Length: 463
Image (cartoon, rainbow, N blue to C red; front, top):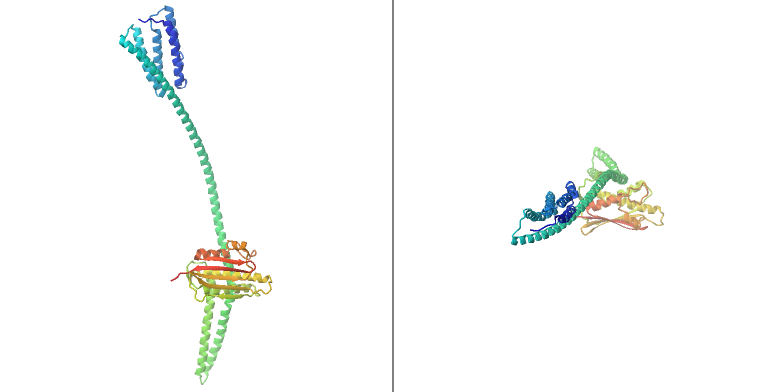
């Protein structure tokens, strides 16, 4: 039978039990996880003191108070571990604690019952106890490692949560900024829409003003140009009336002269043909003016560019002469004898030509007013076929323009005329009509103080 010094066992096993409690508290964070049970664990030393006092007072050395006390401590700690079984390190320690508790319970039963194991089994029991101790130490190390990993994972989760919170805050801030920016952009868009509508209304008014300005030029030319056919109509009408009177007198004579009547009738017929011709000429001028004044329908027809140039050249010239009676210029026309017809909107193309001719006459008039000696104002119009295009060149020997002016000449609202004499839209509209409306080109060549030449090229269909 093994003899124990129980007082010495209690002095050793009591601190060991408390050390186990301290280790368990630190490893499992009992003050945080089980604060109430943690306070009770602080009193585990009390049974050891009472057992030691009992042993010392009664001198009882055959009891297993130390082993029973330690088994009690293991039982309490297993209960704690069972309460924390959801915590991974606690589950790991629970496995080792059960093995140690079983080993210690067997030992206590043997001591209390004064039993001994058979020699072979006693060796096995000692070896198993040692292995259990090694296993418990290994499980403790594994539990510490698990705790470190859990703390690391928890820290990582906290950092991720902080990052997500930061991202969420940034997203909320960005959403707020985007909402503010969207509201500002919406307001700016509405303001721009209103400004665009106002600009379109103003542009429409300016375009209409430019059309009315060109219509004024055209009207002055028409008034002068239409005067000639009207004078012819009036003169031939008067002559025809006189011929009718002579014919009536000839027929009233007792002896009629058929030859004389035939002559009078022939003269009358010729006068009527001339009246018809000049009446048609006047009607053509009026139709051209009406076509120029009305809005473009966009309908293209086969157009004789030579006839259009000839008509609008004279209308532009007489329009300027209506304003300045003292102005005279030489008109030179070099029209190709056989020029293909061009599919064009005649009233739009007429506006282009009228604008170019008006500008040409304005330039030569300006140079004439500068008093250059020996200067003869001249405007020349040349048409020809170049490949699959009809080319119109409007040349004047006026003031010309500098290179800086030439670069801006087709820009909207750019004008070299004094304030009140031009809108700056004529050449811009002409450029759009030729390039966008008819698929052609409009170019300008000029030398300051010498000449200006506009070149219009329009495509035509080949059959």
